Length: 359
Image 1 (cartoon, rainbow, N blue to C red):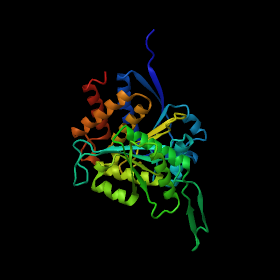
Image 2 (image 1 turned 90 degrees about the vertical axis):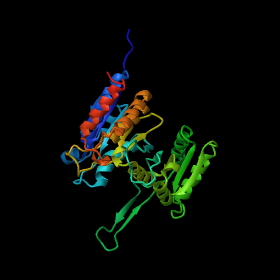
Image 3 (image 1 turned 120 degrees about the horizontal axis):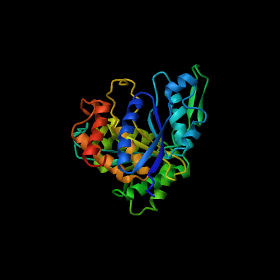
Image 4 (image 1 turned 45 degrees about the vertical axis):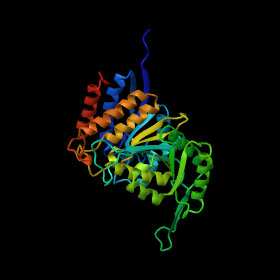
């Protein structure tokens, strides 16, 4: 009997805007790569998002989470259009997926890319990862609004930090740092936020005691943002709350040259449910239909997905192909190039074939 091909069930959600362009591009690359490495990606596409909302009044069907639960992983494009308020689109699709599957790690690596000049005067290469807490913190549902439309209208939004939530994201960050440089930077604001941030600092410090081989440095988040601009090479693993991690990872993507290149893994390390992989960029309605959307963030997110599924060799080869494609100047306008989404996708496939990783 022959060896049975490894198969993975992947739920694809192109979503909105340029997600409908970058997800098909990434799928083409991933299918070529998987065929060359002896495994198969079984795709199920879900047409959910703002267009689905216009038809049904919901961003996904009532059994959407149950449908996604049958997958081994989820590949998401982007969420949002100008016609649907952001708090409706995000809280109707993206955030429920993260929370229902307890994807408490938002893993956001970023590094300087060969041949791409970022906005910094200091062009020394950097390689870091933001580990963002993904299910609680400042993005809580506790709060509300009173006296709408009146002069004394008020809004209250409560940040929710639990010991379990802070401890597990800190442990993930310290464990990751052990495989890298052994350095963790913790983003805080304990000088101004009097309850939750001192609590964050205390729990992170307790976790650090279990990792004596990892160096912990705590930074106020505003100073951390400034230091990232002045010298990103001083950082390796940054652990941050939901809000701080969201903002800092957009900043680090910009330092690399474009938010279009940055990947993200929404991960449940326990594997109880599927993890979800997406570029950190939005739906970019201003360039929809122009063919100029950068597929690198989506493709790199696909590499994170393959690594999570245990296909590390294929994931590493895809990242190496990314470096060679970018170094050759085969890029979209956001990185100073002239090529289309599909042309960059074609370049990835050609590079994989040239390097012997595709049939």
